[in-house]
Image (cartoon, rainbow, N blue to C red; front, top):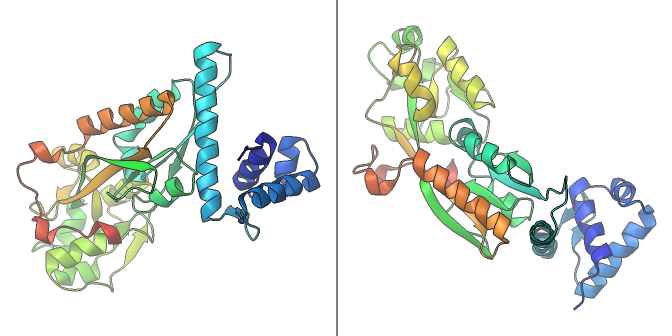
Length: 314
C-alpha cells in the first residue's frame, strides 16, 4: 500500500482540529477536498478511520494517527541531521499527571523544550493519561498502569509518595485525638477533582471502613490544593515532595505519619522511536529515577503490599 501524503495530512489535521472547516483553512484547500481525501484514505484501508460525530479517530484511525505522528518526528529528525533549518521544531506531545508536573517533571519539561522541539504538555490524572497515548495524541506519558498499549513500552520510573496533612489549627479543631472516623465525617477534605479517588481509598484503608459521605472541596491545581490545606480550608493528601518543606517549618502537620501512600509510576513510550523521541524518553527516565522513590533503595513500604492502594481505581 502506498500512503498518500495529502490524505494522511488531511486526516491528522481533522483529528487535531476536530473540524473539517478549520482543517480545510489550515491546509488551504476547500472543505470538500478534505472530505474527498479522507474518503479516499478510508477506501484504501477498507475501514472507517474517523467517527464523524466529534471527528475523533476510530481504533483503526488511532493506529494510523500514531504512524503519522512517528513519521513527522522521524522526518524532522532526519532534516535536522542533514540540513538544520531555523525555526524547525517538530511537535512533541507528552501526557503527564498534575502532581508530577508540580514536583519533578517541570525540570524535565524545561530541558525538553530547550531542544529543537515544540513541546505540548497534556495534563490529566495519572490513571487517565494512557488513553491519550493509545489514541496517538502523545508520544509518551506518565501513568500508573504497567501494561503498555501495543507498540509501546512501559518503564518503571519510581514511586510518588503522598501523605495526609492539615494545618495545626485545623487538626486541633477536627482531629484533637488524631485522624478518626468522627473527624473525617465532620471535616472537609481537599481533593484535586472528581477523578481523584486516592483520598477515599486512603481513608478506607486507614480506618478499615467504607467512607463515602464526607465533604469535599475540589482544587484542580496541585499548588492551589496545597495552599487551601495550608490556609485551613480542609485537609488532604499531597505529594511528600510538596509537603515536607511546610511540615519542617511548622505550617503543616502529618495526620497519619505511619501511613504514607505510594503510587507506582511508569513512563510509556514508543517501542521503536526516532532518535529525538528516544532521547526525550531517556531524559524523562533519568530525571524521574533521581526524583522519585526507587524500590531498590526503599527497604520497606509505608503500606504493606497487601494493603497498598488500588491504583487502578485512583
